[in-house]
Length: 264
Image 1 (cartoon, rainbow, N blue to C red):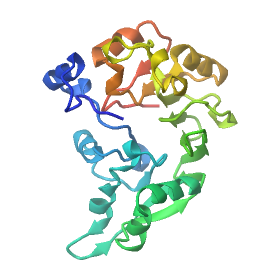
Image 2 (image 1 turned 180 degrees about the vertical axis):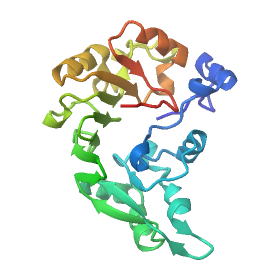
Image 3 (image 1 turned 120 degrees about the horizontal axis):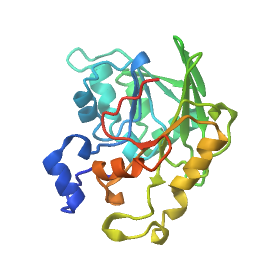
């Protein structure tokens, strides 16, 4: 939600990131499925993220929910699908749950409608399931008090990944989650200590966060082989090196970093 380094912060974590860069920096949350050139979520700095990773082609785009840290970079569709000199669009496929597409339009001034009907740089496909080649994607609405939230179940005949980046608690039951090779999940408290020594239990968002113990229970319940924690924010007050230390005491649970590659 807030990048590292935060430009308005001089805490040790942000200062360290300014010097070391690389994995000590964090941009907004997103996922790229290389097999089908599909991008999920467009934080404000998504163009920087794609450039850093050498991503030069996106054929499919999806956004999980309406929040600004996942939508404010959706202008990426303009250089992808619109030739401003010729005033001509070559639409890329935009895939979303119907209710999420409606939320995004309502919160972003009908932005998706503008891109589809005026610039013609996207083609909107409202659905909860799509198959692209051998890759099958189920879009599951983990609707909570915060609204509509897409969890993605990405699979082929022998491998499965679940991407549940944001607003994950409560984690509504779905049979599709069983026996996943990896669950990529956001908003997990690593040790209950926040930036500046403050405690999670004192924060207003404490009930929206999973603890490590709760994540381990999800891992057991759904027979998930590996968990990767993402959506790691500046206010957690920990560096890449800190997370490497925490991982040593965990069973197949690791913490994401910008540019992480997950091969199944």
